[in-house]
Image 1 (tube, one colour):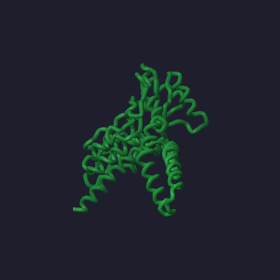
Image 2 (cartoon, rainbow, N blue to C red; image 1 turned 60 degrees about the vertical axis):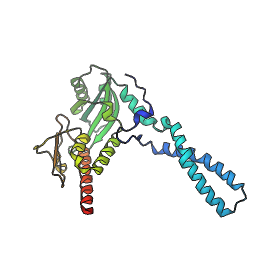
Image 3 (cartoon, rainbow, N blue to C red; image 1 turned 120 degrees about the vertical axis):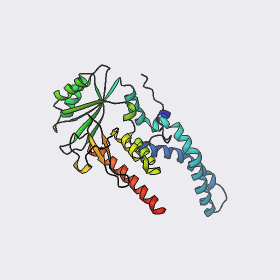
Image 4 (spheres, one colour; image 1 turned 135 degrees about the horizontal axis):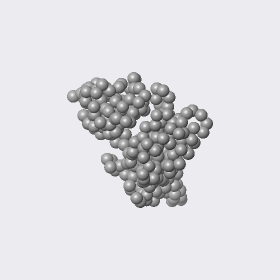
Length: 276
């Protein structure tokens, strides 16, 4: 599988936009775009025989227009690979993996515990690409994104994690598409819900990567228990929505995101009703 990724491959399928670059890189690119224009325009205008107020007005309008409409877009295009370098490198690592897995487990709160897990996975040829910590009632749960050679089984991974004192490891395969730029995916879903609150059930299912579970009792966020694979998201206008994800327990963070999306749908619905 080729791991070469171009910046255009990062565009969102929904809105067509690139992911937001890091603030420091964006600032540097903006300064690089505007500084030469500002210096050139200042040099030309200051040498003219215009009055001071008129010089200030011409400088402000001309420099701003040239920077925004000419210089900045050109520099952003030229520096596209550098601007989005961190995201490109992350996606290339994912794309170059033979197999990708999510692993959730509780790691002991002691020095070297994470290193033990890393070493245990390395014995199988595994490489930890990313780590997230999810809050949970019984203590934080660590989630690893791991690449492995083809042929490594979930059972072998689970045994390796247990050998490193990881508690109750849960493992499932994943793909680069499900891992890269999750924030953009959540924002895209929020835009869809804001445009049409009736798409909330489908948006929640996609956000949680879960199946609707009509009639399932679910579990409210305030009572979400460790290992819960059913989640109920209350929605005042359309009733509660229940979701199930066998083998992949929901976390408090996922529950919170789902509830906020439901709240957005409710706010939009109320606003539209009030305007009628």
